[in-house]
Amino acid sequence: MLGLLLTVLAVLGAAGPQHAVAADADTITIGEPGHITVTAPRTVAPGEYAELRLAYTNTSNSLEESAPLTLTFAPSAAASVDLDGLTFLDGGEGHTYAVTGNSAAGTVNVDWRYFDEGASTTTTVYIPFKDTATGPVPLSASLTENLGTGTVVTPLGSLTINNTPAAADLSVALDASPKGLGVVYATFTATVTNHGPAATTAAAVRFTYPAGFTLPSATGCTVDSAARTVTCDLGPLASGASTTRTLGLHASLLTIGSHLTVTAARTTSTPADPTPANDTATTTCSALTGLLIRC
Image (tube, rainbow, N blue to C red; front, side, top):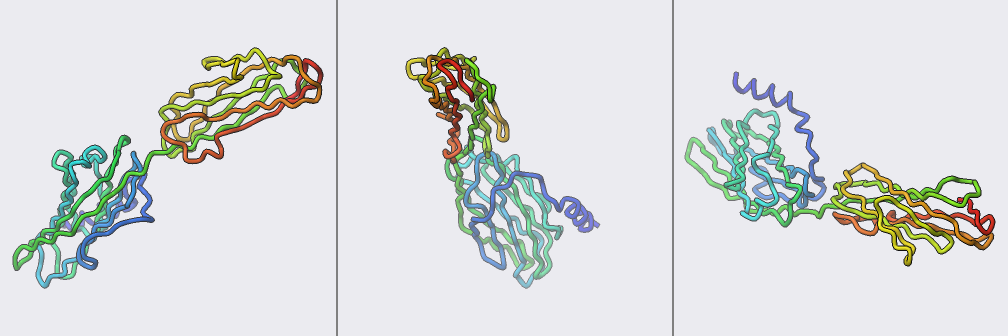
């Protein structure tokens, strides 16, 4: 009856927890294939979950009461992983009675029980990496098989999960208004979008304008009239979010037919931007008369 209940629970949870799981295209496996293996991603970004895939087969010629697996994390891993917050998914065989994480001890204990000869099980453990995770996360594994003929302890070796630096790809777009009219004053709006994967904690965009414009105004931004730049702090920006900053400029004495190009560019951001190619945008206005421009 207990085995049936566990099987039903496993089927109900077959979709697994809805975590942002690190890509497993590049993994590392330790143990003895066909007997006991632990497979982990080589890299995990801060804020993601490391997906550990555990597979075990009773290769003895004996019934087995239990086969607890222990993962032991290096003390330095405490700064990067939250073992108390782990979740797990039984593969449906009904052998996984519990998976317990202990951040204070730096261990994860997998409670596998009751195997016939040749019986197998799989368990997936999701270990959360902290948003502030830094440095490598070394761990080792050991299996204890409590067989009818005695106890066998098998060290599986060690592996290291590395942190990938957090990154946030910011793109900049620039628009001018009004359009198609001869005006003496124009506004330039920079839209900064965070394409992720991480949120930014700080960022700035800088407008640069030519000598044909004067009297710059931009609320909350720093104006350097001598350098003809205006720098605007953006503050924190969640992944997928956008924010805008607007610069107003007046036309000064112009040369008819001249082109006036305004630029908006990301200057700084935290964490690092991995794609600088989309960090700059420009728009150009033309002088219609000595005082009027069209953008």
